[in-house]
Length: 250
Image (cartoon, rainbow, N blue to C red):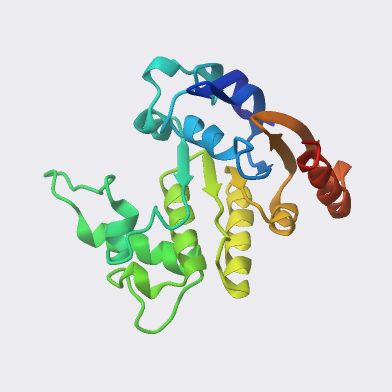
């Protein structure tokens, strides 16, 4: 199985507080891993650094077998290397038309350099119907994003990542505050990523959701990885108990 991410000896400090301590992380093609841990465990900082929003103080990072120059690593270079981060709600402009939202910043242009709106709308309808499974009357590429449910909006962001051939999709709390029906949709979309041979890093506080879709679990506490274990090697109950034990150590 091809390795798409290899992070070694990663450190990060905010002032005098060390928030990431010697993090080592690997991710394979088509693999879904869940980052688990309490608030302040280091999950958010880790994904911010991986997505280029912030920089590691020190690390060795290889993406798709290419060594990354961390001094020049930013959001654009992360995206160019195949990383797409979907933050809760923030990736979705509610009052935008669906097709504009999908292609924002990455518009399709014709031979004259003009935006090809018709092509964007055609692709958007294909994603709506075949990835999201939405074939409702009145729904079109020109519909507002606000006409979609919370789960469908998350799915839209995931579909965008697949269309632009992202190799790794980072999902930050994608099921938070969603209705049960929408949660099921989002979990289904994550499974769809695997079918497209995309890798996923899932950040969640919900162990049930993590266990349903993940191949591996990584538990962080105070900036350190305490557990890195495959789903085949641990039951849901054992996973819950292990996480509680780690959180109660301090």
